[in-house]
Length: 57
Image (cartoon, rainbow, N blue to C red; front, side, top):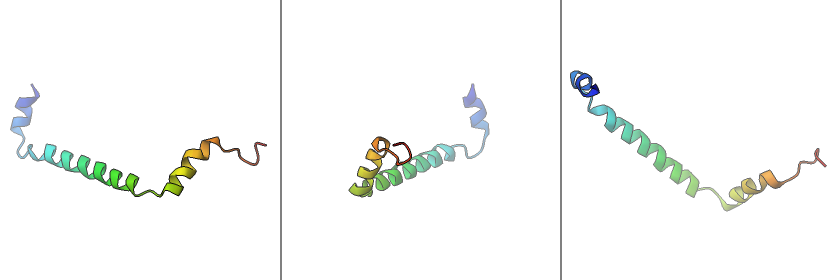
């Protein structure tokens, strides 16, 4: 059903390409960010929920 509507739109083939480029750009940049994190920062963040605040004691 939608195939007929999409066939009427000029240049509709560019939308999947743009979507794929945006997804890959986001995914690759997220991977770069995750692998560039320092071990000290990751250790600090993973222990943060377990630490007690000074006003809770």
